[in-house]
Length: 95
Image (cartoon, rainbow, N blue to C red; front, side):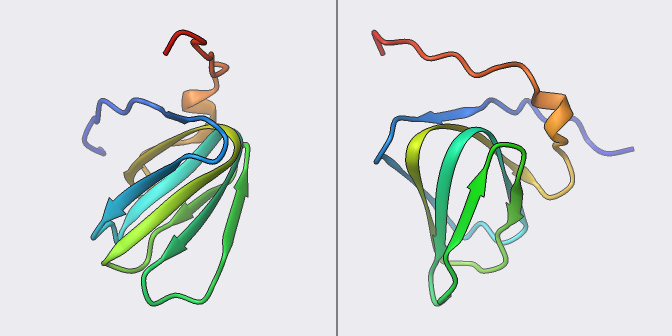
């Protein structure tokens, strides 16, 4: 059985970023919106939309950029299924 994690969605407004340091093995799963991921020493551009995920495969800095308002979770690979987090993302305009 997999360990249980209390995984909270990260919400980013359009054009905002989130940095992850030494995240090899972490999986980014998009719940809503669109994000762009880039990793240190990696020439690839990874674009993810709702329901898609990517496992970070390098240590160093990874940057997640919200192309439009986005909600995503970051957890050890294989611990989040999109159906597990299917509740619609809500936005708090006062935040």
